[in-house]
Length: 322
Image (cartoon, rainbow, N blue to C red; front, side):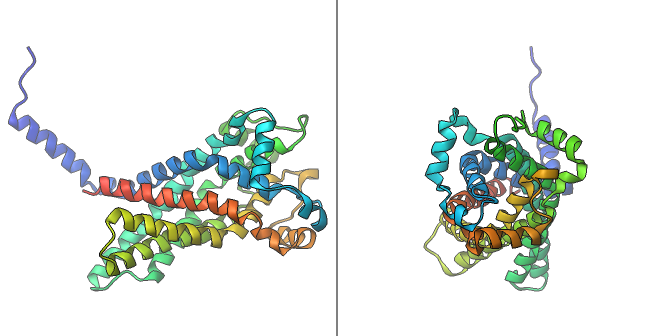
């Protein structure tokens, strides 16, 4: 016969749970855990659009301005091309790298943002004022830069895996997964190659984070202050839509340069000698408008991802708010 659970046993269990809930380490880790989970959930939904976005950015590379303008790089044309090549699941190429990137990058950037905002929230309460937009900007820019440095290897592996299908059959690397890609790139090009394109990656992350987190936080605060008709869920949705647009607008040129730099290998495959060289060659060969070509696809990729990430993070934060 099983022993009866006494009232004292229940109180003891509740005490242990409460201690874990309110422990400083738990409160420190929660923004990071919630951020990583929200980013991974969003990436799983958005991955096919990201695949198409990368192919659009690489279309016409090195072909000159006139030829680049004639390349069929519409979302529908590229989707048909990928599916016609044999496997609809190719739209999910690089998913393992995308999830690893979110596990590192989004865990870091959302966690750091939450940590920095907690600091600014406590500071503003002590000073009896509201958190300023400048403080939100500092938190988002700093969190984006730190997260991007940590996540660059997974980001590079993602680009290599997604662009592998553009090579001839004989030249394809045929990576079996993200760990296989990271290992082979490190052996062939050196460990430092995993941070190729780190500068535009950091710039892109800071721009995206600024547009996404600073504007989401600010829009939500403004809606809470001035609008009494929307529920908390509706306020979060409206704020996430604002965040999605600004995240896309600010980050696309940096994302374009990052993609070009991370796609290239060593030796004969290397076309660009850094960020400025890439910018100069793209403007000369393809025109300055190339940096914003495909904005529609990029917006469809970034805006929903930004919206889903902040919505998932907001939801998880409310569930774990003790």
